[in-house]
Image (cartoon, rainbow, N blue to C red; front, side, top):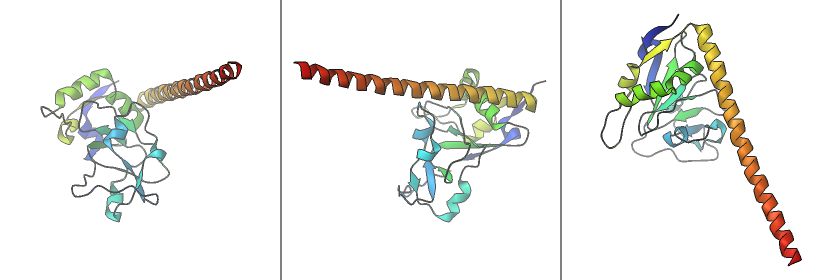
Length: 197
C-alpha cells in the first residue's frame, strides 16, 4: 500500500554552505573534498574520490555529507538527485545545493529514484522561482509530495535503480575503452602506412 507524504515529513532538508567572502582553495592536503553544483549537474556519475581537496575551518566539517544523504541542485536547469554512499575523506557540499537526509521510514536510494522520475521532475519545475536563474528553494522542496510504498518495496526499487546506474556506468566505460582502442588502431595503421610509403 502506497501513501503520500511531503518531503518535510520524511526527511531533513538543508542548504549547502555558501562561502560569501572567499571560497575554500584547493590544496593537496585539504581536510575535506568539496562538492559543487557543477559536479552534480555533470552528465557523468559523481566520483566522490576525485573531488578536489580543500581546507576548511573545523566548524564546517559538521556540514559534511553522511552516507545515505541525497544531494540535488538548488539552482539552474537540471535537478538530478545523487546518493552519497561515502568517500575516502569527508565531503563538504558548497554553494547551490540542497541536502536531504531521509528519516527511518524513507530509503535514500528510493528517494533518489523518485526524485529523478520524469513526473517528479515536472513537479519540481513547477516549484522553481526566479526568472532568469531558476531556483529550487529548500522551502519549496520540503512541500514536494512523495509516494511512499512500504519499506520492502522501497528497497527493491532502490536496488533495481542502483543496478541500472551500475549498468550505465559500465556501458559508459566500455564506450571509453572502444574509443581508446579505435584511436590506437588508427594510430598504428597510420604509422604502418607511413613505413610503406
